[in-house]
Image (cartoon, rainbow, N blue to C red; front, side, top):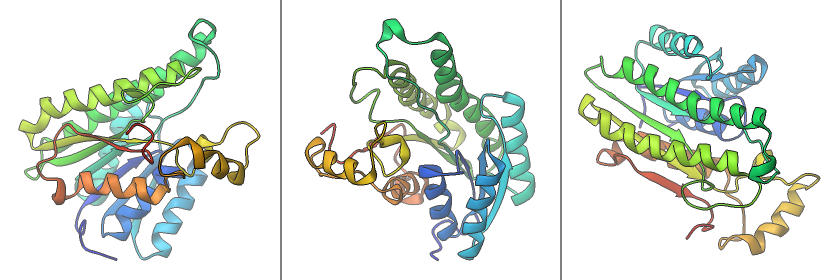
Length: 254
């Protein structure tokens, strides 16, 4: 355990698995009390159990980021339970795709917009509303993607569009609210060691072989590496970093 975030409260959405879980565990390992949020209560309970097993403090809260009522309640309960909301990581997201733009199902388009973009907006609004009333302000990190503002691939237009918008929204919000004492930045992961980076029917070993020639580093990023980038942006070490979009993608967009 280190003390970089001792006395701080961090809210992480999409904390039931993958990058979100890694971020929640990383904050807890560095002293933060962590509110782990997501749609599935059982996976959130597992995240909090891992936090507590390692000696940290966590709280699991089921919430749907596409619901403004859920998000407001999530922020309020976090602040009431721990006494403050110092850090927020808006990580919840979904992937839909596999078809060209002309064949993209309208339902998939709306799902992507609602979760990946509107969900981030609603979280930002509720988090800023809480943080701007604190003398200490706060730090917010939105999880975008290297697919979007940084590169494009065929068949994922809806996902790419929403993640590019998250990058732009993060920068705009950073300018709007730095005067409130709130630093807002984004992290854009590339291929990461989660099921999301596996192609249909692909094993971890298959992906490892594919990555050797697909990205300059020759491998996917670990979830811990993405979490380290998030923690940096949320920490005092990044006190003058405002409106950045930090790409962590094994050199894919270098």
